[in-house]
Amino acid sequence: MFLSIKRFHRFLAGQSFYPLVMATLLALAIFCGRVLISRRVEFRLLVWNLFLAWLPYGFSMVAAGLHRLFPRRWGLLLAPGLAWLVFFPNAPYIVTDLYHLEHRPPVPMWFDIGLISIYAITGFFLAAASLRTMQILVKVYLGRWLSWAFAFATIGLGGLGIYLGRFVRVNSWDLLFNPFQIARGLAAPVLDPLNNLRFFGFTLMFTAILLVFYLMFVSVINRAEE
Image (tube, rainbow, N blue to C red; front, top):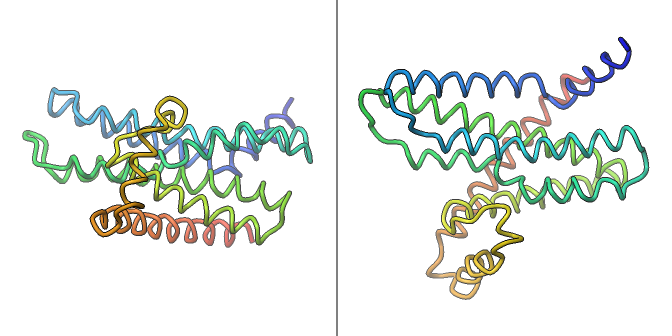
C-alpha cells in the first residue's frame, strides 16, 4: 500500500501536479477576495476558463497513466490524445482575458491585473506541462525528432485555437457541434489575406509566445532532472 502511494506521488510530481494545484488555489483565493471587496461576482469567466484549461492537462495525465499501465499499447492513447489536442488551446487562451481589463471601482486596477495574470500564468503552465507529457509519449513511440515536430505543430495549432476562441468565438466542442462556423472563420483569412492581417499577426504572435514559454519550461525541467 505504501509503495503504491509512493509511486502515485512520484507520478503526480513528475507531471508538475502539485505546483499547478497551488497556482489554481491561489487564483481561486484571489477571485474570492475580489468578490468580498466588490460584493459582486465579476470575472466568473476566469474560473470557467481555468476549469477548461485543466481539461487538456487531465487528458494528458490519463494518457501517461495508460502508458504506465499498458506500455507499448499505443492504441489506448489515441482517445485521450485526441481529446487533449482538441482542448489544448483552452489552457493558454486565458491570457486573452486581459481584454476585459478596465477600472471597476471599488476594486483597484492593480488587483484585477494580478487576478487575470495568475489565471493566465496558470493556464500557460497547464499547457506546457500537458504538452511535455504528450511529447514524451510521442518520443517513446516515434523518436526524439518527431516528438519535437509534434510539439511545434501543436503549438502552432494552439496559436490558431486562441485566435478562433477570441475572435470567431468558438469553443473546442464546436469541432463536433458547429464545424461550419470554424470553417468560415478560417476561410475568410485564407481567401482574403490582405484584409485579414489580424488573423496572421495574432496567430503568429501567440504561437511565438507559447513556443518560447514552452522552451523555457522544458529547459528548466530538464536542468532540474539532471
